[in-house]
Image (cartoon, rainbow, N blue to C red; front, top):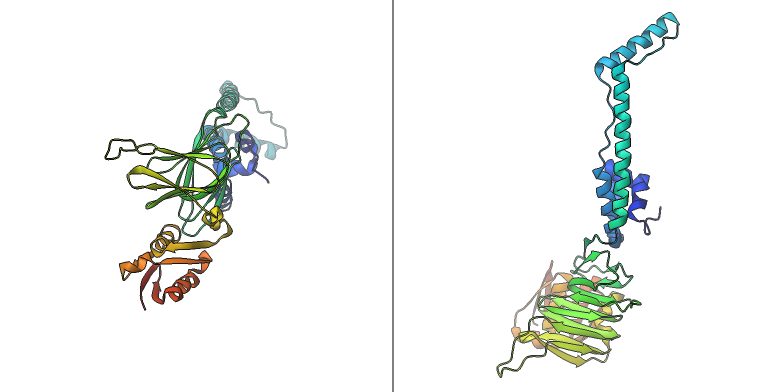
Length: 350
């Protein structure tokens, strides 16, 4: 069954979905959890259907023991005499039957009103979505407007779904990601919130945003974006610092000390999105920056036996799944000794 286009109403009518909500087992639990990880944009519809289904308390009618015994007596009398025994319900039974029908009618009315409420509010309710990657993992997310986000390792993307067509499309990023933003007919803005008060606002474009503890950077491949800092201080002479920067393709903006935005031109913006091809690329990069990438994205702790080694600049590339080959290239380039034990790397003179 293809559930990708299902609405909350569709999920409510699906037998397999109902079994998972009302009678979960290891098989259906595994299926739905894997499906939600693959299609996080559908979590809002799933949660609405699940909550509604759980709110309907269906309980089977249970006959009193006295009535069960009386029915068995009639059955035994019929089998022993061979005669047909007519069962005539007493007044209490008739009254109970009417009450059961009233209950059925009440449940039907509840379902009807719940459906109307679901239809009325399905466009206004929002559900928080959070997608995270582990060290070295790369994951692609399709947002409610069909924009694409490729998360690099050790990153978190969060947003509320669905999006109102008249409001700003907004997501939050911790880590690093490549954005391919869809342009809407009504020119609906798209905003990425990073830490340190940095916001990236676009209409339709492609860019890489890095939001790490020691690095906040935007590299623009296509389109036009505005990078703004929410809280900027003033310089010593009293003049305000630059709080926003308008970027063109091929430019890089980095957050510097004191919330200053520094903009430069880069010759090959694609180098900063090399992780899309599962590559790790460095061009004239200080080993201190190489160490930061290995820590933030791949979970390695790098130690320099001599702090001066961190200033050496390295050019090279490799496969993130074969870090040992990259370390060997660094070792030979500078005639160093590199020791790797588990997730810890030590770089020291030969």
